[in-house]
Image (cartoon, rainbow, N blue to C red):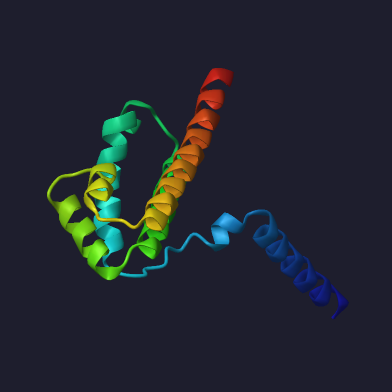
Length: 142
């Protein structure tokens, strides 16, 4: 009986340790807020590959997933700042072939919204640069 309790306790502590030390695994499931997220993600994937040519470098699946998660979070944060008519206009601009920056410039944003969107974009760019710099460090070590 004591052996079974010890095994169960060991398994439970391992699971808790994994959850605490690797929270990204536990939170890897995307949450769907509204239907416009898909539109922005599809367009920003094209934009990112045009501007920084991620297709030219060989990223690991984990690094690609990290970049995608950063872009997805950026999209959710931008959508939280916009009102419903601005979201519709943004989706329309993206469908017209504009990249995310061009589409955001055409929106009639209030000064507070503009500041928030710019902060979101700067923060996202910093996160993406950090991921890519980790990639370049790994390539340099090999």
